[in-house]
Image (cartoon, rainbow, N blue to C red):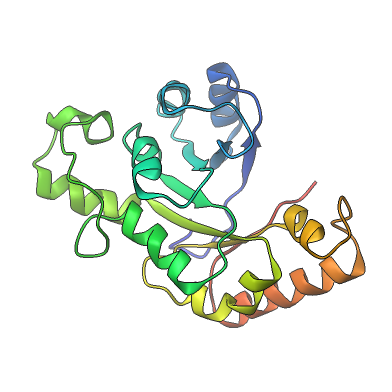
Length: 209
């Protein structure tokens, strides 16, 4: 849908329930986001949720807690198909995400071709898996502070970034209006960011309630 420039509809997963993942998949949601930044989602827990996602074709994405290559790799090897990284503030932050998620030549992800994410090496050759993973796995920087908004043009231009999400919760904290995502200062910065992304033809993510 992203490649076809169509809207994709997903939901945050706030409870580590495989049944809920299956339920969302059969309802027709396109993706769900596992919040490993604020929730108790280990790679082991995440793997059970990824298994629950596969029969219905819903795409599992995980918001990791930090922009760290070994940390990100432990979630990638469960079979998740997208990595969202919070507090992305600079172009180098965005490049670090791409390096962690993508195999060479796009990134520096370690060559694990016999993991669960690679079907244990039973269904394709390593080179085929690396190419497919680079094509299918989403890179999603999450912009949540004024510094990130100031560097938005550079962040969204980084090769390998698939979509950019803007986070009102932490933005309200950093602007001195905690718990007020609808505050006019927060809304003004979000609106300017969304306009910038649309003008550049980039895929943007937004949370609605």
